[in-house]
Amino acid sequence: MIANTTIRAISRTGAKRAMSDTPGPKMHKAKDAWKTIHATRPVDPHPHNVFHPPYNKVTSAVAVCSVVGLGYGVMYSGLRHQQKKQGYWK
Image (cartoon, rainbow, N blue to C red; front, side):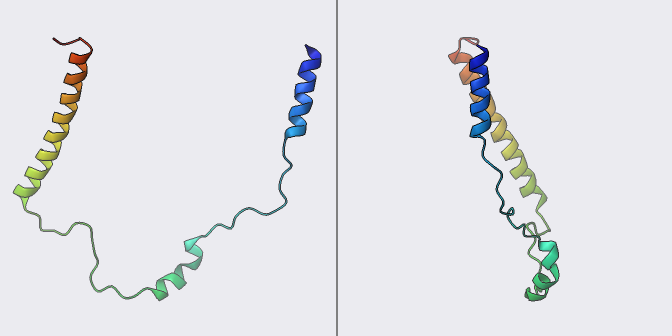
């Protein structure tokens, strides 16, 4: 038993790979080259935001209520199906 443990420990130490002498990967840091990047960008006269106000309040309310209602409906439908399938609900 002790011989097996010793043999396993020796084989594990022999199986370990030696550390590499090559340096690690070069990390690209945009903060180092920010002035060069900023100087080569074209001038943008109009910022393209994701959301452009003004919003229609009725349309936004209907969209939010629809998404929440459909999400709840889908989750409840799945719950009901599983409860009936597994015999908890009749």
